[in-house]
Length: 276
Ligand code: AMP
Ligand code: ZN
Ligand code: FE
Ligand code: FE
Image 1 (cartoon, rainbow, N blue to C red):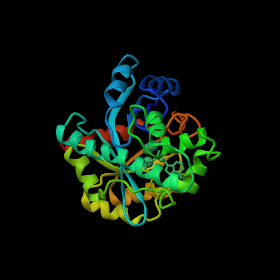
Image 2: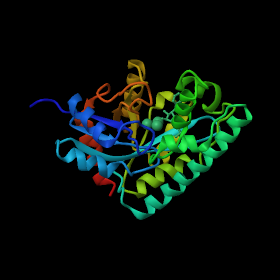
Image 3: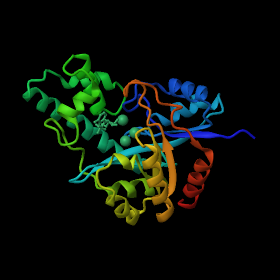
Image 4: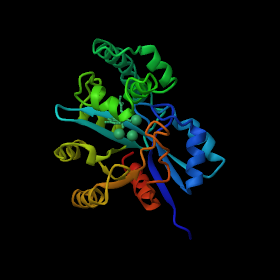
């Protein structure tokens, strides 16, 4: 039997990737993946369209989401797998977060204007189109307007965490995020821990019901993979991984660059059944 692989961290144009569901499916099939998870920021709208297209190809689509919380030190991203994405209470809660993202962009463009950067909220909303609007859209408009030379420069100078034009997300604690995913029948997993400044939040979140850790990620080198594999074993956490592909939003299509053993998907699926 040939080995099966998965990419459990993929965005679509329903958040801040440039790729439509059909493009995500095409790239995944070409890369030889058997399964992908759709993990858009604060939305589940990309799941069904991707599933509908993937069905014809045999590609398995795991329903997921990526939530953002922050504390005084850092941003924390929490992935939720096998959530009941049709649950009304879940959709109601993420609708509140989506609305707050719109206000946040207005505040961010106000701050940018005060810094002498001419950018309108409408330009950012047009860029986001149907997607949950966020800083990657702001940054890509800034590049288009030649305000910065790169996405990276926009974050570094203006909109990165605690930079002059940074605006906080809706107040939402790590405990609330883990809880929201668990109550929707999902498996909460801490995303790309190597990008966090302070790992102690992982232990804290285990106390709230965190079940997994993203060991394999585009921004994890082999040292980070080893470190978090060890941590997963020590704490009894599930292991996940994915490319965090944002289409051209992050320069190039990353689908196919992080491929994890399908056995991790089976373990995740099993855990989701137990949590129901
Ligand atoms: P938001 O949801 O508005 O907080 O924006 C999050 C998006 O911005 C995610 O796609 C992040 O990967 C991306 N992002 C955050 N910091 C940076 C950075 N320094 N450089 C490039 N992208 C970033
Ligand atoms: Zn993103
Ligand atoms: Fe993330
Ligand atoms: Fe992501």
